[in-house]
Amino acid sequence: MSAAVAERVYSPEDYLAQERIAEHKSEFMDGRIYAMTGASRAHNLITVNLARSLGNQLLNRPCEAYISDMRVKAADAHSYRYPDVAVVCGRPEFEDEHADTLLNPTLLIEVLSPSTEAGDRGEKFVEYRCIPSLKQYILVEQDKPRIERYERQRDGWLLTETAGLDATVSLDAVGCVLALAEVYDKVFGVPD
Image (cartoon, rainbow, N blue to C red; front, side, top):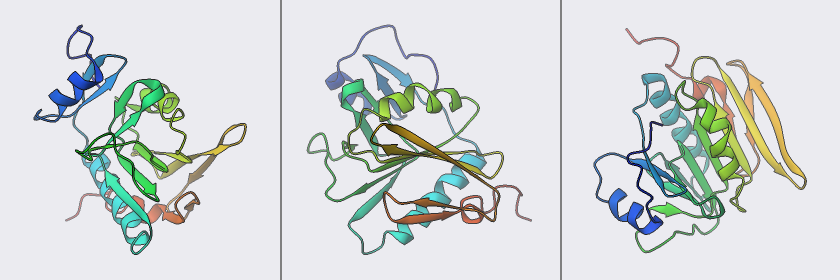
């Protein structure tokens, strides 16, 4: 994420009106709008691989997977974010009739980038924890096969780390399994 677009403080309504006509995506936190940066080849491949794997596993089930164009609102944190992947199980709830701001994600996934890693681990995770429906938060490294799974418990969040292309990660909240070999398909080499 880059610096705030302006020092002006925006209302959520102003942000949404501007965002819905903008050519480039921006996130919103506490009245400030932050322009989003582009993603690397590895980041894009991993996001597509995650979406494909989850989408295939969720076929004919009451869950929906969205990629990075679905905005998520953390109401108590006063923010709007674009996770790399969001999954909702059950009836999706949206902020308004535009159906472009999800309120009740079950699972959120962020692919870590050098420019976003600190925020994904810090302030963004703090905001996401304010979403009552969120059961799991996943962080995916892009330079090595490693996934961190945070799972909501009664008294906090439990971290499980998984590494290696032969490993799998259970996403119990949505009834799926991620095979790291699939998540990282084509990431560590450029095709001939």
